[in-house]
Image (cartoon, rainbow, N blue to C red; front, side):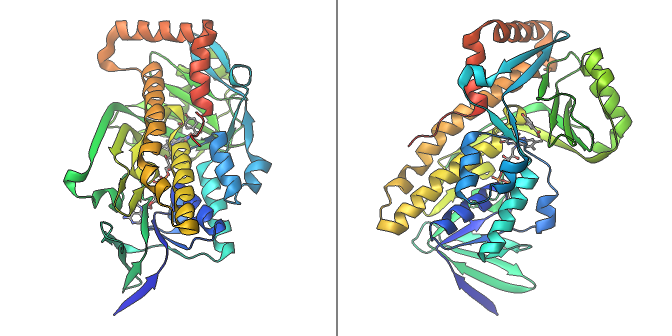
Amino acid sequence: MTDRLTTAVAIIGSGPSGLMLGQLLHRAGVDAVVIDNKSREHILGRIRAGVLETVTVDVLDDAGASERLHEQGLVHRGINLAFDGGLHRIDFEALTGRHVVVYGQTELTRDLMEVRSASGAASVYDAQDVRIEGFESAHPVVRYRKDGTEQELRSDFIAGCDGFHGVCRQSLPSQSYKTYERIYPFGWLGLLSDTPPAADELIYVNHERGFALCSMRSHARSRYYLQCTQHERVEEWPDDRFWAELKRRLDPQLGERLMTGPSIEKSIAPLRSFVVEPMQFGRLFLAGDAAHIVPPTGAKGLNLAASDVRYLSRALTQFYRNGDSHELDRYSERCLRRVWLAERFSWWMTSLLHRFADAGDFGARIQRAELEYLVRSRAAAVALAESYVGLPLED
Ligand code: FAD
Ligand code: DHB
């Protein structure tokens, strides 16, 4: 037996991109169903992004999911770069007149899930064996199993918001797209703890033992990252070892003041740059990590997901309001211009701050020269700041 459903837009993936798109469409009166192959609890267990650009905050405002973000999000007007034993502030407010907001992806996802379920819009979790078909025609279909029953969802469009390992990009005919990729020879080991942050603002550390990042989720919850090798496993990093290594990469005064405590989450993320072109195939539109990955150093992944979804929701809304597909046709080209600028920035921040085994002493000296240039030259600092706070959207 097969249960049959219909909707306007089938959204695959209930991460930030799928949920933001779902809410923007709902508010514009466009029907959508969100389908994820994991449970709500599993999705909310992922600890990822922490830094939001204004563009992302605006999307959450428009999605009606920003109340808690405005109450609890921390406005950050700058970041610190630590190298050669010194701490140097990049003042976003002075350099660009703008700022970022520190608010965890987990909380943002929870807020979006709550507004979605309060609105009565349909979501399916724990869907098994999700498949997409017919997106080259005007009648795409999503098939999956739920509680042992085969389901068929017919739609006008499919939004592939299912992350890097999702089914949507993998369903494209192989000759229809091109991918661009760089895999970095290291990963990030992250630790979350209920301890006060090391400083009021984030600290990005370039150190001979490797990159470190001191971040936060609130005044009482900290997030730290250490550059580690690609092959390391979390089990090899008991908390004591993590804290000791972090202190070695911080300047001694800061290390001494660092408040340590038991971890509440620890995980390792690989670092990768990846783009698929184009981001549209027939009636399938890819958004967020399904279409592109950036190494996390520039804090751009979630923010790019928000800008894709902003373009896609407007294009779909225009289609349903007046039958105009002009914006849908421009979707891929428009997104990719912003995607490549963020790819460049994330690659550059990664190159600037990490230890590369094959770059040798020369590479380390070039990094130091670049860091000094950033600290001394307003033009160089503006270039960092304007990408970090987020480049403007096209109209
Ligand atoms: P995802 O969050 O991956 O969501 C995809 C969803 O699709 C998931 O719920 C998944 O279960 C579901 N799915 C997968 N396969 C299927 C299938 N076959 N069928 C149905 N559903 C499926 N970004 C920033 O902007 N700022 C930061 O500070 C930042 N820091 C980061 C730090 C780390 C350590 C990491 C790892 C990432 C960071 N990012 C950051 C990146 C950010 O987390 C991602 O870009 C973001 O999660 C992308 O959202 P998404 O919805 O596109 O994909
Ligand atoms: C965080 C992650 C990042 O990639 C980054 O650049 C800044 C902060 C975070 O998880 O807090």
